[in-house]
Length: 275
Image 1 (cartoon, rainbow, N blue to C red):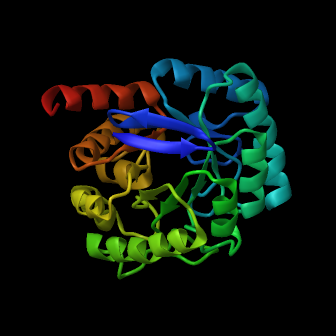
Image 2 (tube, rainbow, N blue to C red):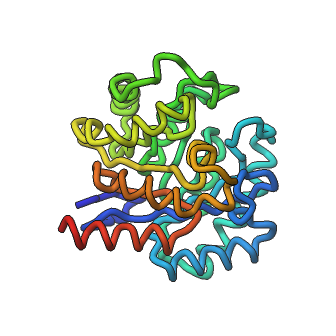
């Protein structure tokens, strides 16, 4: 049972769920995830909800390697109108804001977002944890090994699940001390790890269940997958489904994906074999 208090709405899911990715950026690594207009974003949201997404993750700052830092003002211009437009058409939708800026998190929640997804785990913006606590939203805390300006640089000590586990011990304590009630942990596939370490973390994901927090897995079409099998982000759907399936078998609660339908099928098939 996955239970989250989303700004006063107590939401319960009895099986793993899917989070659909909607990027309002021109440079996200998977072109099909880019919404070039508000109407594009609403159309993408509609399809993802129809395909079974439980949460939609809205981002206005690409976090791919080498992406341009656009600043809070531009990020707000990208995401706030999209959040408002999606909720106008789908008022019951649960939206998360993908940002590492506390000011954007606050504006997004004021616009109707219910979850804050921070790839920096509060280490980029010192105001983030206190802001999330005041907003009373669930918080997605992601493991990474880089600095605040380079979350992707491989760090030698992030080679085992133990290093990821230790990172979360410290960050979960920081979240608790700030007053955040619901924390989701994301092992950070593709952030601060070698290709081998990325797959090792998925293989050993069950160890993170000992932390007693929901686990989000975000492997969708990432370079560790397509470089391993040969290809591009555009050809990495099958590889993504394989890695998502391993993650589900090892305890993932939320799959963050570009392709909702296929992720829902993976959940359905795993549930059939492991009810």
